[in-house]
Image 1 (cartoon, rainbow, N blue to C red):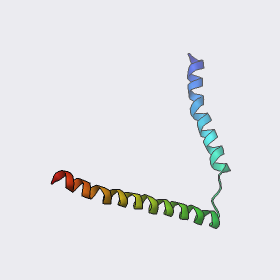
Image 2 (image 1 turned 135 degrees about the vertical axis):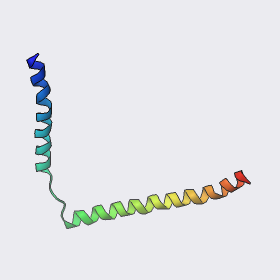
Image 3 (image 1 turned 135 degrees about the horizontal axis):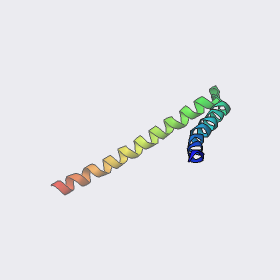
Image 4 (image 1 turned 45 degrees about the horizontal axis):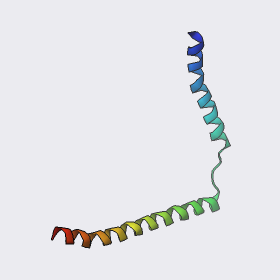
Length: 68
């Protein structure tokens, strides 16, 4: 019984230890990397917005044809 309880208590400790090791290995992006990420995310927003706009333009006439 105590062996299973001890094993159960080890899982969160291992998770925290692995998580702290991961955080310690990570580093902040430099200015060039940061602006590359910002450009990529911005391009994604623009592309998704354009796709949504085109889909809405296509569906507005279809909806009016169905309801009229």
